[in-house]
Image 1 (tube, one colour):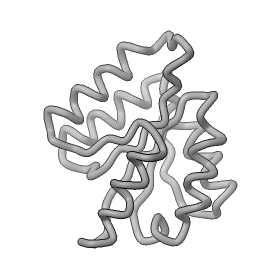
Image 2 (cartoon, one colour):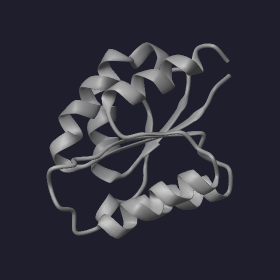
Image 3 (cartoon, one colour):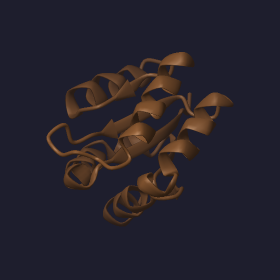
Length: 124
Protein backbone atom coordinates (compact mmCIF):
# COMPACT_ATOMS: atom_id res chain seq x y z
CA UNK A 1 0.00 0.00 0.00
CA UNK A 2 1.39 3.36 -1.03
CA UNK A 3 2.25 5.81 1.76
CA UNK A 4 2.72 9.56 1.73
CA UNK A 5 6.27 10.29 2.91
CA UNK A 6 7.63 13.74 3.77
CA UNK A 7 11.40 14.16 3.32
CA UNK A 8 13.18 16.98 5.15
CA UNK A 9 16.83 17.65 6.00
CA UNK A 10 18.85 20.43 7.52
CA UNK A 11 21.59 21.84 5.27
CA UNK A 12 24.43 19.73 6.69
CA UNK A 13 22.27 16.60 6.38
CA UNK A 14 21.11 17.05 2.78
CA UNK A 15 23.88 14.83 1.35
CA UNK A 16 22.92 12.14 3.87
CA UNK A 17 19.22 12.15 2.97
CA UNK A 18 20.02 12.21 -0.76
CA UNK A 19 22.27 9.16 -0.34
CA UNK A 20 19.61 7.44 1.80
CA UNK A 21 17.06 8.06 -0.96
CA UNK A 22 19.46 6.68 -3.58
CA UNK A 23 20.03 3.60 -1.42
CA UNK A 24 16.27 3.12 -1.04
CA UNK A 25 15.13 4.33 -4.46
CA UNK A 26 13.29 1.12 -5.37
CA UNK A 27 11.16 1.16 -2.20
CA UNK A 28 10.58 4.92 -2.33
CA UNK A 29 9.41 4.69 -5.94
CA UNK A 30 6.22 2.98 -4.72
CA UNK A 31 5.24 5.89 -2.46
CA UNK A 32 4.15 9.52 -2.79
CA UNK A 33 7.08 11.72 -1.82
CA UNK A 34 7.09 15.35 -0.80
CA UNK A 35 9.52 17.57 1.03
CA UNK A 36 10.69 21.02 1.88
CA UNK A 37 12.13 23.14 -0.94
CA UNK A 38 15.81 22.46 -1.42
CA UNK A 39 15.67 18.96 0.04
CA UNK A 40 12.92 17.93 -2.37
CA UNK A 41 14.73 19.33 -5.40
CA UNK A 42 18.08 17.74 -4.45
CA UNK A 43 16.44 14.33 -3.93
CA UNK A 44 14.50 14.56 -7.17
CA UNK A 45 17.60 15.62 -9.15
CA UNK A 46 19.79 12.88 -7.71
CA UNK A 47 17.28 10.02 -7.85
CA UNK A 48 14.89 10.89 -10.66
CA UNK A 49 12.02 10.27 -8.23
CA UNK A 50 9.12 12.70 -8.28
CA UNK A 51 9.15 14.72 -5.05
CA UNK A 52 6.51 17.41 -4.53
CA UNK A 53 8.32 20.47 -3.18
CA UNK A 54 6.89 22.80 -0.59
CA UNK A 55 8.57 25.95 0.73
CA UNK A 56 12.03 25.86 2.25
CA UNK A 57 11.92 24.91 5.95
CA UNK A 58 12.87 28.35 7.32
CA UNK A 59 10.33 30.00 4.99
CA UNK A 60 7.39 27.90 6.21
CA UNK A 61 7.95 24.49 4.64
CA UNK A 62 8.07 22.71 8.01
CA UNK A 63 4.73 24.30 8.84
CA UNK A 64 3.26 23.27 5.48
CA UNK A 65 4.26 19.66 6.15
CA UNK A 66 2.79 19.98 9.65
CA UNK A 67 -0.53 21.16 8.24
CA UNK A 68 -0.59 18.12 5.93
CA UNK A 69 -0.04 15.89 8.96
CA UNK A 70 -2.95 17.58 10.75
CA UNK A 71 -5.37 16.84 7.90
CA UNK A 72 -4.20 13.24 7.50
CA UNK A 73 -2.24 13.69 4.26
CA UNK A 74 1.18 12.54 5.54
CA UNK A 75 1.83 8.99 6.79
CA UNK A 76 5.57 9.19 7.58
CA UNK A 77 8.11 11.97 8.14
CA UNK A 78 11.80 11.42 7.46
CA UNK A 79 13.61 14.44 8.91
CA UNK A 80 17.39 14.22 9.00
CA UNK A 81 18.10 16.95 11.50
CA UNK A 82 21.51 18.32 12.42
CA UNK A 83 21.84 18.02 16.20
CA UNK A 84 25.16 19.89 16.29
CA UNK A 85 24.12 23.13 14.57
CA UNK A 86 21.75 25.75 16.00
CA UNK A 87 18.80 26.41 13.69
CA UNK A 88 17.13 29.82 13.56
CA UNK A 89 13.82 28.13 12.73
CA UNK A 90 14.06 25.67 15.64
CA UNK A 91 10.54 26.56 16.87
CA UNK A 92 9.16 25.37 13.50
CA UNK A 93 11.05 22.09 13.83
CA UNK A 94 9.70 21.58 17.35
CA UNK A 95 6.18 22.36 16.13
CA UNK A 96 6.54 19.70 13.41
CA UNK A 97 7.74 17.15 15.96
CA UNK A 98 4.82 18.05 18.23
CA UNK A 99 2.20 17.72 15.48
CA UNK A 100 3.66 14.35 14.44
CA UNK A 101 3.32 13.19 18.04
CA UNK A 102 -0.23 14.54 18.37
CA UNK A 103 -1.39 12.76 15.22
CA UNK A 104 0.67 9.60 15.85
CA UNK A 105 2.72 9.91 12.66
CA UNK A 106 6.07 8.10 12.69
CA UNK A 107 8.99 10.50 12.36
CA UNK A 108 12.60 9.46 11.81
CA UNK A 109 15.36 11.87 12.74
CA UNK A 110 18.30 9.75 11.57
CA UNK A 111 19.26 7.04 9.07
CA UNK A 112 18.82 4.10 11.47
CA UNK A 113 15.26 5.08 12.36
CA UNK A 114 14.44 5.93 8.75
CA UNK A 115 15.62 2.47 7.71
CA UNK A 116 13.41 0.82 10.34
CA UNK A 117 10.34 2.80 9.30
CA UNK A 118 10.87 2.39 5.56
CA UNK A 119 11.46 -1.34 5.74
CA UNK A 120 8.41 -1.80 7.97
CA UNK A 121 6.32 -0.28 5.15
CA UNK A 122 7.24 -3.22 2.94
CA UNK A 123 5.21 -5.45 5.25
CA UNK A 124 1.95 -3.57 4.68
